[in-house]
Length: 296
Image 1 (spheres, rainbow, N blue to C red):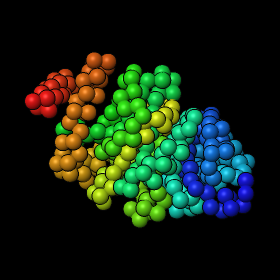
Image 2 (spheres, helix red, strand yellow):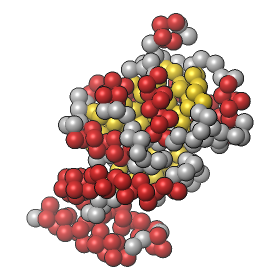
Image 3 (cartoon, one colour):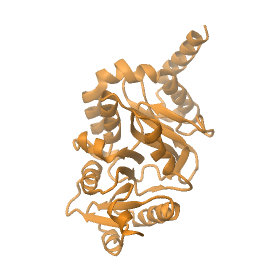
């Protein structure tokens, strides 16, 4: 690779890892396969004190990889902020180590920033790695303020071919401009392995920017493999709502009513034992009420 590309990569891909060495190897292999001739890039990997051989593997990697090693666990937000502050690229692409990319996934995301001057965080569509069902097409907010992934369990792609605006996107795979991300002080480190991405997107929204999903960019995610995520779910949700509930209910959840209702209705039909009956009935009511109002 030319020295100019080594010194000035277009994209810095950032991966926070804790163990799961097999996933990390597969993730890096997919990145190399899809990006080798497409654009200039570097890969920054932050290891969160793994004990499974990950450290030894990472120490053997050469350019375009640069690795950082923690002596103690610091979590997703701190790890990604560390890498962002050491990145050389114009863009930062955050990728979980259990996300496997394919095809032309990154260039369409970069193009959004050229086409949409208000672009803040740009994400893509994600499918479950093992079942191939859709898992994420964007984040919507419930009437109570809780964030949900639109499209979970869907069999059909709702917005194929579109670059669609969403209230938020997941950081399992997303792209930002480095300069703006650093100006925003990166991910809020009060969160521990969850809700950092939603909080970041809401801060971009508050700053007059928008978050988009490129629906022709599709990656595969091993859902639930991120270490420590479930452990802190309730804590992170409480912090998020403490910071944003009023704004979410006033702004985001109003815009998201139909999309949230649609995804929650589908959840009730496919996962009834994981669905609140009263919220499911409420979602049906909201969906048809708004549909009728729009049709009148």
